Each structure stands twice: as C-alpha cells, then as structure tokens.
Amino acid sequence: MKKNRRFSRELSLERWQNMVKRKADRKKRVMFVRIALATIVASFFAVLFLMPIFLTITNSFMSASEIASNYGQVFAVNDSGGRVFISETVNLKFIPDMVSFSQYFTVLLKSPDYLIKFWNSAVLTVPIVLFQLALATLAAFGFTRYKGRIKELIFFSYIILMLMPYQVTLVPNFLVSGWLNIIDTHWSIWLPGIFSPFAVFLLTKYMRKIPASYMEAAQIDGAGEWQLFMKIAMPLCKGAVGSVAILVFIDYWNMVEPPLILLSDSLYHPLSVFLARINQGEIGLAFAVATIYMVLPILVFLYGEEYLVEGITYQGGIKG
Image 1 (spheres, rainbow, N blue to C red):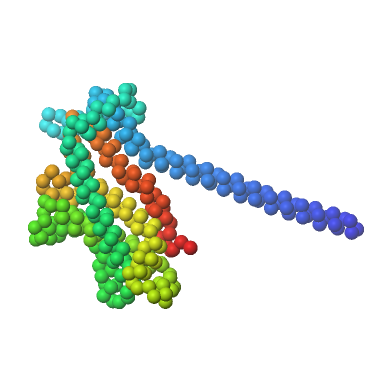
Image 2 (cartoon, rainbow, N blue to C red):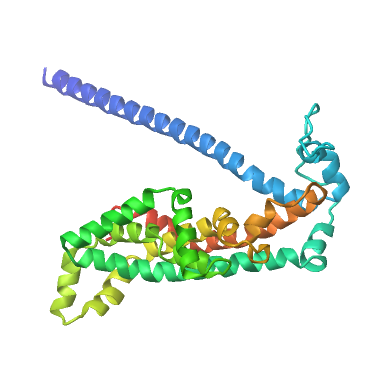
C-alpha cells in the first residue's frame, strides 16, 4: 500500500513537472514568435525609411543622361512652366549602370555656390546649438533649484511659446528684428534660435528628476551653487544635454522659413533653402548636393547616438 502511494505521488509529481515544462516551452515559443514578428516589422520599416537615403546616395553617382532617362518625367515641365502628366512608370534605379563622379566634381570644384551654402548652414546652426545649450542648462538649473510663483509663471510661458508653431512667431520675430535693425544679418536667425524654449523645457523636466539628497549632501560638504551646477547637475544630465543637442542641430540644420523671411539676400541662405531651387537641368546635382548635405547630420547622429538613447531612456528618472 505504501509503495502504491509513493508511486502515485511520484507519478503525480512527474506529471506536474511535465505540465510546467510544457507551459514553459509554450511560453518560449510564443515569445519567440512575438520577437520574430517584431523583428520583421521593425526591419520592414527600417528598410522603408532608409530607402530614400540609399536611393539618393546611389543616384548621386549616376550620369546626367541616366538620371534624365529614369526620372526625367518627374521633373519635366511644359512650355508654360507647369508639370507634365506622368503617363509611364518612373524607373526607381538603385544601382547605376556606370559610376560617375561628374556631379561631385561640379559641386565641389566647378561651382562654389554649393559649398558657400553649406558653409552658411554651418554658420547659422552651430552658434545656435552651442549658445542655446549654454543658456538652457543655466535656465533649467535655475527653474529646478528655486521655487516661487514668478518662476512657475515664467516656466508656463516657456511651455506656451514652445507649443506655438514657428509660423505663428515668425511675424513677431520679423518685427522685432526690424526694430533691432538686424534683418539680413545672421543675428536675425541666431537670436530667436538661441533663446528658443525647447531645450529649456526638456532639460528642466530632466533636472527635476535629480534627487534632492544629492544637492543637499553637496551643500553640507560646502559646495556653492556653481559647484552644484558643474559637479552635480551637468554630469547627471550629460545624456539629456547630448540628446537635446542632436535634436536642436537637426531642427535648425533643416530650417527653411526663417532664412526666407529674415534674409532677403540669397547670399546668406543655407543649403536647405538652396536645395529647393535646383532646377530641372540639375537633377543629378540635386542628388549629389543632398548627399553632401546629409553627411554632417549622419556623423552627428552616429557620434551622439549613445547620448541620444541615454537621454531618451532615462528621461523619466536618473540612472542609478
């Protein structure tokens, strides 16, 4: 009798273990299927988003005649200046029949206009990024450290300004620039960009997640406000500052409306404005210029990818 009971208990234990094992295997299979489906979907969208970039880069090495034969109908115009109706399928070609560097030779050596516009983009963007981050970190530290109704009102004003589309503030910026007599100068682009509320808002929300005990411990050790800013706030917000720098750079690197409104002289226009004005006879140059224009943002992203991911990942709290 005892042997039968013992055998039945061992049998029930074995059945229970097998059931648990089957459930674990089923859970693993379901998890594997989910990961596989998520990977397929992510890969599809990654290829979809990267396709225009890859197409632009490869087409920049095509000759002008090959580009015209593949995409000529897209860019063709009639005698009155209107677009021609496309009756045939456009040939999206990723690999050129013969690699040609003539477009890059024209852009880099024969025509200095493109390099001048590229330099204008850098001159307009880099100071905005540097000084906006400098002012935003100081302002965010002030909003974090000091409490009060006036401070909250100012920060609420920052939020309202940030939510407004840039087209709404473009006319006030033009009027103020005219009053300051800085229209048709770089300052008309720099000043609104440097004092933009975007970076202040993001860095303030991040700094508010810093535990107060960090600041209190440093104050007990005799640290002043500047030391708290440099030794506590900035090291903890390094990822957030990096991610904001990338976002601000991409935003102002691709700006179009401010130069068109505030800079009447096309000599000061960035390459982002000049790209839209390449005519139908320079389709190949458009691919080459667009490729050159993408180089700097891609390098910035690749260099700061770690900071961007860290800033986004730990935006809700400080990494322990």
